Structure formats: structure tokens, C-alpha cells
Image (cartoon, rainbow, N blue to C red; front, side):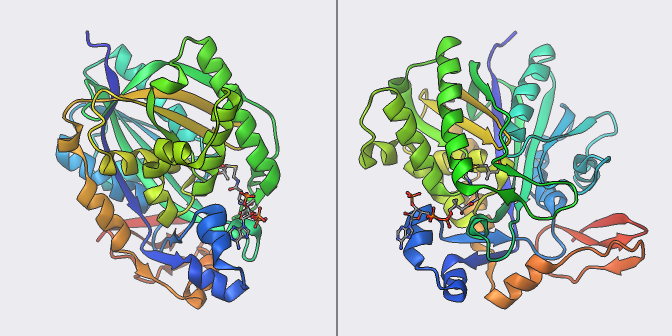
Length: 389
Ligand code: HMG
């Protein structure tokens, strides 16, 4: 039995629209350097009124099913913190939209931005139990803060779908993991709110504490040393956070955190998050996609992953890039998902921010806005109605 399990395929999708930070800055009078340099963000994906975590997830997962078929997929793990229902797993809609067989288990996982990493680890456990099976792990989120709040500039939306399998074509995930949980109120969203609440500075401090905590545990579990890693994929609520996190890790290990060293370690991982914004559960894996799409051959090299979810749970683990991975990348499709977005003005953004599905139980159609493969057509009798376009 092969011991090698990991990410066999990775595909992502994002929203229909994009709001450049220059537009937000022109509206609220912020010096653009604060966005472009201070937090390291250029634009944010905004879903259309007829898009949500399900339509983005289905758009991300459909190419995986098209390439690999459905025969070996017996589990779908859907990680999100922008859940659309308190009971039904969003993955069941995706299961139906992309034509998975009925002999599948589907479940939704939540722990802020960390959920997809839990999903990945649980998937590895399932594949280890039966190497003939594959698990579809989906991370899909819409990050939404109050208008005119400090968090507003860090919104975004995207879904990543990963096929977890034995003998993976992209990245083999290694066994030791560093774990860290702390009960903190740095960022949260009570059930009665559409937008997240956050203590910005507290959340940055909590993230850095988690970097330290996971790293210590990773070392105690017999993990690799810092200089064995060719690159680091951090959770990126805004790309500058990855720079802060890696500087912290270098300092903690007694190294100088000069900008060049930090950029060399993670610069390539920020390309997609910088223009998509915070995609919560998907963020760290968008970092991986950006790294693999742009790096010179990383075959045999180790990549460190730091997944952080507010509240908080974090995990540090390592992956090894597999020989031949370049032939399996989706670089063109990934670039297309980003460049196809239509730029919107501030008024359009505000209307989308304020758009809510009616909650009166009546029949309501959504405006046709998305040009993506799936849409949320409307709601009827409190039931969401999805369709393929
Ligand atoms: P803020 O108060 O608007 O900004 O909040 P600031 O005053 O802290 O400035 C930000 C940076 O811009 C600073 O740099 C300024 O110096 C710099 P730093 O000191 O941090 O290096 N700056 C400039 N730079 C160049 N030119 C200029 C300029 N002006 C200022 N002209 C904050 C920023 C990130 C706190 C806010 O956007 C926020 O609350 N965001 C949401 C929370 C967040 O993303 N937290 C991150 C850690 S928690 C996490 O990652 C989990 C999360 O993803 C949720 C989950 O797990 O589900 C959020």
C-alpha cells in the first residue's frame, strides 16, 4: 500500500465582479498606499447577486470531475464559514450540480478560515483507510464586513476544490502537524449577522501567537527544520499578513527577517490573494495555486503550510511537490478566473453588498448577473434554487 497521499488536483473559482481598491479609496478618502502597500491588496472579488458559496464551489469542482470522473469519489467535505443553512450541508447542492453518484457522503465543516485544512487532514485519514477512494475537499467563502469598517478593504470571495488521493500528482502531504487552539474573540460572526465582527489588532496578534504555537508543536512532533523549506503558504486575510507571519517565524527561530528573505519565501504565494481578497477557508490553498503556477520547478521541494482560523485553531504542516506536477496544473484556467471578472463602480458594489435573499417564504427570482457555469436562480418557499447555465 502506498504511503503517499495528498493533493492530486486543485481548481478554483471566484466571483463575477471585482472592486479595485482604487475605487474604494476614492470613495472613502484613504491614501491608496495603505491598501496597496500597508495591507498588500489591489482588488477584491465580489460575487454577483446570483452567486454564493455553492455556485463558486460547483464552478471550482466541476473541472476536477471532468478530468478524473466520479468513480472513486465517495466523500465530499465542504469547508466554509459563510454557510447558507444551519442544517443542510452546502456540499449537497454541489453534489447534485456536478453529478456525483448517490453513494457519496457529504458533510460541512466549520472553524473560520481553518476549516479546509481540517477537511484536508480528515480526507487523508479516509484515503489511508481505503486507498482506492478519493475525497473531494471544497473550501468556499464570501468574506463580508460592514461598509466603512476597517475590515471592508479585506473582503473577497473564492472557492478552491482539491481532490485528495493516494499517489497525488501535485503535493504529497507529510505526517507531522503542529497544532494550536486558543479560545480568543479576535473575529467571529454570530448567527444573526451577515457580516463578521473583528478586533483587527487583536486578530493580528492572535494569528502571530498561533504561528509560534503551531511551529513549537510541529518541532515537538519531529517536523522539518526551517531551512528545509523552499516556500511557505500562509493563510492570507490580506497579503501583508503573510509577511508579518513569516517575519515572526524567522525571528522566533533567531533569524533576521529581512524583506528579501521573506519575499523569497512567500512572494509568489500572494499573487492570487492580492487581487481576490480574503477567501477565508480557500485562502491558503489559493496561495498554493499561485506558488505552483509561477515557481520554477519545485519538484521534491518542501512547502510549509500555515492555516489559521480565528477563534482560534491553527495548523502547520509540510507538503512535498511531486515530480511532473506542472503537467497537471490549471494555470491558464486560474488566470482566466481572475481576468474574466468585470470591474464594478462603487455604487454597484454597494448595491451588491446590501443585496439579501428575501426571507418571507415567497417566490423570488435573482437578477441574471453571473456568466459563470452555475447560478442561484432564486428562492421559493425558503428553498434555494440552483441551476446550470
Ligand atoms: P486599519 O486600522 O484600517 O489599518 O486595519 P492600520 O492603521 O492598522 O494600517 C494597516 C497598515 O497599513 C499598517 O501597516 C500601516 O502602517 C499601513 P503595519 O503597521 O500593519 O505594517 N499604512 C500605510 N502603508 C503605506 N502607505 C500608507 C499607509 N497608511 C497606513 N499611506 C486591519 C487593518 C487589517 C486590522 C483591518 O483591515 C481589519 O480589521 N481586517 C480584518 C481582520 C483581519 O484580516 N485580521 C487578520 C488576522 S485574523 C485572520 O487572518 C482570520 C480571518 O481571515 C478570519 C477567519 O479566520 O475566519 C480574518
